[in-house]
Length: 401
Image (cartoon, rainbow, N blue to C red; front, side):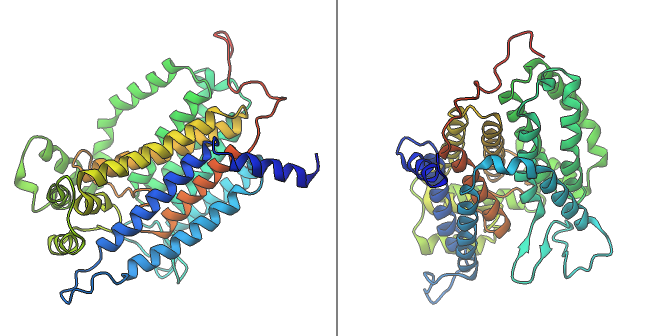
């Protein structure tokens, strides 16, 4: 088959209405639109009534959206398997960027600490967060490593994968960005399950990790300990921290409650958000803005779109017999699903506020770029016809090692 004929066949497969990649794409569009509208609602309240003018944050977010969509289109064009041989280069480049952030003599105009974290490289017109790129590269590296292996079905065969995971997790934790670092493990477990790892091995790892978790408390930074204490106070009904360590969480829950079932009119919602002074309402706390503006229906719509994205990615994974493509989709679904769940739980007072953004919705260029690249990768896999020369991916007999 000629290159042109192959391209036409791929395009035809992409345009089929039964292509599950459309589910992911439509969910991405819905979340992005909801994010832009919510960021506009979170803008500064104007007493002269001119609240419909685009805020600076909204304008910048629209630019980020255009860049993200363009990057997604670029990633979706070449066959995704061409990325495989490049994974070592991508991994080394990502690690170097993460190490660069931690070099103490790098000038502050290039790496500007934010709230004590060295996680962004300043390019003048915008900032770039390597941890966002690290998520995608990590999924590609692990998927390429596991695609034809069976060693992960032995307990000690999981050790190399654990060591590979420790590199980005450790470097991101040192920034410190514990929230982003915590997202890698659920994504890894999702890929291991899809790759046929034995559940009993994974259960043992989870139990050991759960028992060892209290040992990590003494090495946490003071602000991380405060967040855990604040969450405990909320669970036991202690309101002593509502104006202190739990201020952000309490205000978020209050604003969500003020939205009721149907939400508030635009001007009223913006006034409530402005005068309640919710910190990071454009970023980590954007679900509180959605709850206040659009009420319970808005939050259910947000949750539904997140579930739809993950479901669509898993359908794409189930529809391919290529092990690399399947693991890429599962790993990205793990990142998006867990990150969305943690962010929404933070706003509902069900999890400590750990600085995790909401994919496609929160303000930020790096987050938007990575989210749309993920969409492009999943859609790329959905466009490719299953290879008749490949057997079903990751089918093992009980005795297979």
